[in-house]
Amino acid sequence: MASLLIKNGRVVTADSDSVCDVLIEGETIVAIGRNLPDTADQVIDAGGKLVLPGGIDPHVHLDMPFMGTFSSDTHETGTRAALHGGTTTVIDFVLQKQGHSLREALTEWQGRATGNAVGDYSFHMAVTDFNEQTKAEIAEMVGEGITSFKVFLAYKGALMIDDAQLVGLMQEVKKHGALVTVHATNGDMIDTLIAQHRAQGKMSPLYHYLSQPEVTEAEASGRFTDIANYTGVNAYIVHLTCEGALNQVREATRRNQRVFVETCIQYLLLDASLYGEDFEGAKVVMSPPLRQKKDQETLWAGINQGLVQVVGTDHCPFLWEQKQMGQHDFSKIPNGHPAIEHRMELLFSEGVSKGRISLQRYVAVTATNAAKIFGMFPRKGTISIGADADLIIIDPERQHTISAATHHMNVDYSAYEGWELTGKIETVVLRGQVAILDGQPQVEKGYGQFIKRGPTIF
Image (cartoon, rainbow, N blue to C red; front, top):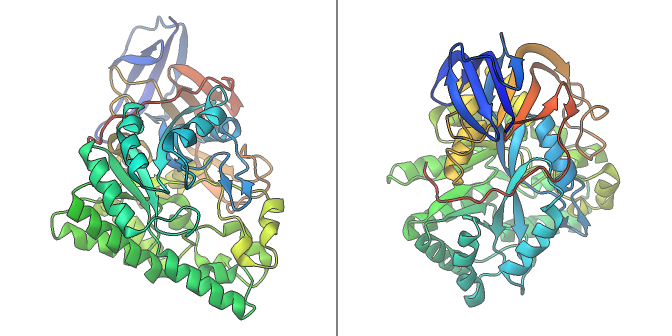
């Protein structure tokens, strides 16, 4: 069994911070302390650097069928790019097709991921057709280690469920101690606004944004939160973007309700000024869309207030050629944004280095909280004896620049082109194996494992 010693690093978790050594044997951490014996097969001196838990991105869409095409990163390219950026585990979404079973959908996604993933992965199950057969499959999915079920309150005719189905799903999921997550936007209102804009010949990417005003997200977030409160299910809002939606969660705390909230790196750093009358704005067409500066301020505050527990990506990349499908009609632009590789370094540079969040809060929102909410803690998301040896080593002062020319995602542009960052992830360890070293991958496709998950322990 190979061993690895990481020496002299500043080891930071969500609740600890000390200069010490970490000893790894096989895939797990076996000792943490000062001046551990220097007898391992491999030794890395992390003096002057940060040693943090590997990132967990609980919101990615790899090789996903959508709007007549597929997202451009496969489980191989996507998880490899994630590793380059310090994310060692991702949770992808299995999408049930309406009229088909959850098992069929899971089999389809397993066929794409098994033997192809470079980094570790798990699945959420998106329920798009809740009926008696689906209801009977919930326990089966939980037994497979899939303990989170997503619903869409938008995309009518493809993914959206109604409130009756939502109540039924929540009641069944609660019986099994699992979690319901939501894409919380009001699909009926959005579809109406899209139709109005198209009828007026307003076809540029700007009208994607104008078809999803803040009220569409605030209303759906409040409705989901209210129904979750009634059913008592564990509830999680994905990719929350705006002040109105977060205020619905804030209000829910007044009745002693707990609602988990995820935002995404783009909503902290990019804003709606990128949508214009020219087609360039298609690069940042995503749902929900980018919001205003005041919403960014709300989200950063929400992180520090503990209202926002997770920063993910909603990584769903499309090549520029694929985005062209909507060149003459914004409603045909594939929705999605590439970020799986840059989340950790962007948040470190813009958050920690600029003093917006503490280093321990950074660890919490990039790794630990997701591990606890999604039933992987303490195996994942922390540095502790017995945990998987998923670690990243960061040079906190090293400068570097983001560019599509050098990133590893299978997409030919970046919304962060030319951004200069402070803090570079230099070494990534996944289950005891050095996976990325100085920008070079050290593990092959198929090294990534499916991670069975348990209940929320947050």
